[in-house]
Length: 414
Image (cartoon, rainbow, N blue to C red):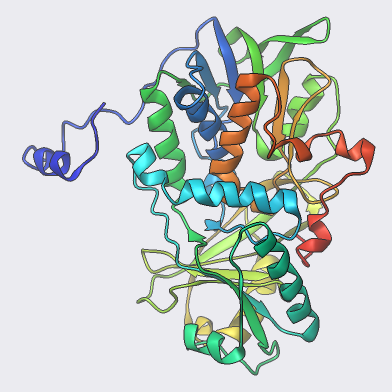
């Protein structure tokens, strides 16, 4: 496999870039593996990579029913931040942010991480009080969140309308947060995992689980049966379907989360802007498109399409904040299937089936945790014991009552 560098780029330019090796192999499904990861999105590929790279477990397969990154990894708004209120959440997302900051060099693949800073706008006294509370909690966990005055917000966002229907009274600012390229993250992890010997099997659907005496022994797939010692399910909104194969239910519902992008324009926005009060978020891609998102749909669905009603709900308040958006055409709209738990926090846990682990329930915040989630889940699978950062997100919390309430902490309806 080629090592990506300026030298290799120059060398291949002499031959018209026709001799690059494939980024990853397309192997056949073998009869057995030590560990199988179900789900070829960012979290699953990251888990496989860290299993091989850090924990030395290389007899690993990633099974994906479609194509790599074809689920939520390629259907999100690419924001990476860690400003969460609850301690468990803050530690998980900060772990991911720290890994993101050096991921390109680690994977030898440009994931285009840009620490451009994230502003969360405040539109009321309540918003200001909530942001002050959150900033204090974040600082206790080593996360630097700064509270900005209205004048500082205007300096950072000259185009914003401070006195419209949603007046801006200040903001919370995380300077080391930002964006990464979602496809680049998936491809980078896939390429690096493949280089370490991980088999990545696309177009392979899991149809049943082979369980004996309460222990996982393998999977029934569309490409045949495969045996394994442990299984890690990282299938986002379809995790509940796979849990049913294991004979148990997850406290989770699946809904669509919609987003859209505008036509490309010259650089006008060098920060990520979020508003909890009206629940919209906005950034500008390197191609010039404005990437726009909002809250999840209020009904269960596996749809991956957009709707005019959602577009209107997103754009109406956004035009109030940034009037120039009213003159832009929207080019694409899509939906991703997100899995939401009662406390709006993920599940990283053992299950009633021995050797079967689940990583799911990330709701609307999964992309930002990709690196951290993959790392701690890989550690849990390799050692057969939940990593300390992952331990609070166990299924047991729904029995004990020790929930991680990011539903109310986020101040939004998700």
